[in-house]
Length: 365
Image 1: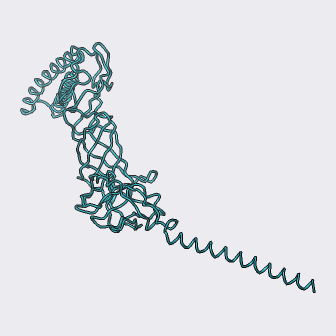
Image 2: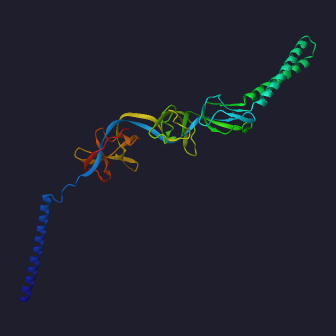
Image 3: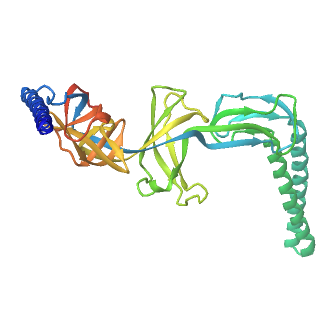
């Protein structure tokens, strides 16, 4: 009997302990439910601060940019056409000379004497020719004698003209107009036939030669305007236009040659100056544009975060067009007047609440 009562008491104690545990769990659940109802742990996430810009309509240009070194369109190496000692120098490096202007003179005495000698021989033969002609017309000399004298006179005439030409070559003249870029002789130097004596460079026009990727062949054409900015003249822009385009693609580089003539101002340009060249080949007017910083590119797809009226940022796909100076055209995906996130987008997820702390100024294309 005692054993039965002990077992019954143990069972009752176990039931009481189970009831106590269940009661405590109920209280905890109720407390948690009250907390949720009060709204403390379940508050909305705080808004993420971002910078943004408004989609506006502007003109946007399509530009090819490259680098080039200015080259002279015309350059000539002046050579001596006779042998002799240089007597006088009439042009120095940096001087501008006109075509035909005398640059230097070579000794003339010997060549002048050769002219006088050839002229005297020619006069004698001309007299002999006239006498033979009269006799031939009277049939007093044979045709062979007359033809021989005539041939001798013609040969001497050529000798005289060559002597005159050599005398003229004692004045070394500029073959083109331009600047003396190099002088290679001094007074008293002996120059031989075809020795270089000067180098002349024409600065009008100067050329910017670019090697352009083949993908640009369809958009570039002769006559397009170019602008050039040079390291030697910061802040200055020089205009020009494309004057030549090679129709051949270099298979080794995949490029073709484009030559633009650059217009000088106040003799500021010189061959060899390095600069950046821009070629404007298309212009789209009054199209939606956004800052390039607003665009997220992943797997060759472009997206932006558009801020709605409720303050949430929605991820949206966009199609881009021309881009220049930090501004990109939007062909599809956003509309004029909408707001896109430009800074802080890296921490956003689709639908996140945002707080715009600054509306950035829209740069001009």
